[in-house]
Amino acid sequence: MNQPDSQPLSLTFDGPAQSKIHICRSIDDINAADWQSLAGSDYPFARYDFLQALEHSGCTNAATGWQPSHLVIRQQGQVTGIIPAFLKNNSRGEYVFDFAWAEAYQRHGQPYYPKLLMAIPFTPSQGPRLLLTPQLREILDSASLHKLLDTATTALGAHSWHLLFPNSADQALLCQPQTPDSSQLHRLGCQFHWHNAGYGAFDDFLALLTSRKRKSIRKERKQVSDQGIEFQRVSGSDISDRVLDSFYVFYQATYLKRGQRPYLNRDFFERLFRQVPEHVHIVIALKQGEMIASALFLSGTDTLYGRYWGCLDEYNHLHFETCYYQGIELAIDLGLQHFDAGAQGEHKLVRGFEPLLTHSWHGIEHPGFRDAIANFVAEEREGVRGYFEESKTLLPFRQTENEKGG
View: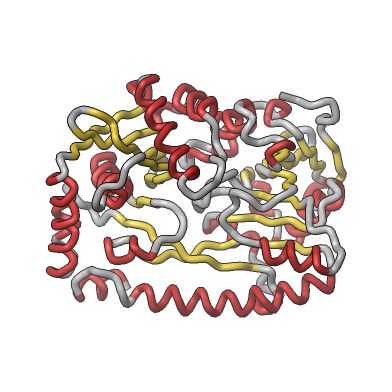
């Protein structure tokens, strides 16, 4: 997978214990055992196999605008940190939108790309972005981390860096308490996630909703079954080539209906199903024995992630049933505590998915644009916080559950 100019770039970083940074243009340049020892298995998208499948299938490379540029931190010859990263020449597939920033740069004759992006490609799911040993995490402060990212950005000839959807541990390290909140390039977003309160079955979840919402969901589910639609769940190594073929046709249809090209090819999914089968689940909708729709889910240690879905024909409430209600049942059956069904979607709110703030951090090199973007981000944060608080008042749980959940 390496290209002729893809040799790792080495930098000396004047940070903790005189760290050295190696910028690797292919995941193949990084030892899989080193990566996995830092990434663990809790979050499937940070797995070496997942990112390798993206690269080897040709979904992440310079041609697609996702040139792997992973940051590997070494101390005394040992790998103590890895930050999955990509050099981007566009903003597609990120889900934290900066198109307006790029357009502003262009209007003023300034280059916005390339930019350095620390994220999981095409995946708006919160999780670890800084894969660090406990020892490095303990001695690495926010100022040093930002300096490290600035150093890597400059070395790559990029004009900015962006770190998207970090988990709470990484948020704590990225946040700069010594800097007033209004001047931080810290963006907020809002998603809707479902949480498992120890339910034994879907009806246990429904029992906590208001009577009106409970009846509404039951009516939606009945309308799906009344159309003669049944569901089947296939996981891991039981996913056949026939199921994969049908799933990929449905997945493509989701994008083609919008006049877009899908980000992922069939080769990626084939590699994914083969390399990390323990994380993969497909829900299939069947009508008269024929597959009419499907949805792909990945499972972590405590969270189910709903990622891709598609259908060819339209059926009443099929999307809600396949992607949300079947996902809730899958999370309950797997004993998972949370269900992240993807970005956006206020329609999730009335179906028991609770609002969750998401975060991203941005390092802008150009001082003039940095000030303007900082002002925009500060206003945006206030708007998102207001939306988040308002959303909590619209949850469909009975009043006792609202009081219980805060």
